Length: 101
Image (cartoon, rainbow, N blue to C red; front, side, top):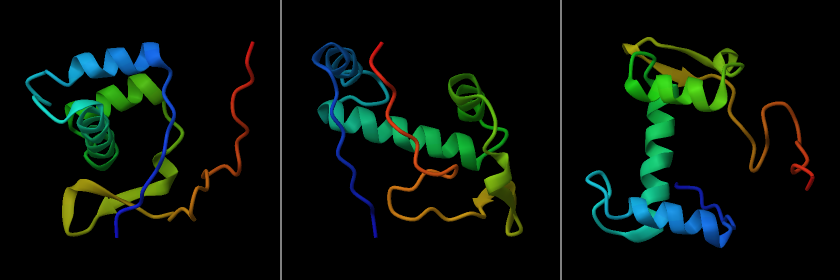
């Protein structure tokens, strides 16, 4: 069953995401489709170690998450999540939102 999330995005960031909604990868569907594409690409980067998305994930997030993954015995080129999150749970515990500086 798909999980649903709600996020708030400042107008200036929304506008940049909207620009991507006319890209080759996301030719229609607006910002929602852009976010869905980014989410799928991020998941592919975690799941597929040799993918271009993995390099993108490493650049964007660094490391520190590999201990939640193991090689998929049915697909050696793919990873599976070994630590399942509870609803809205961060793997390191609750992380407070960044403070406004």
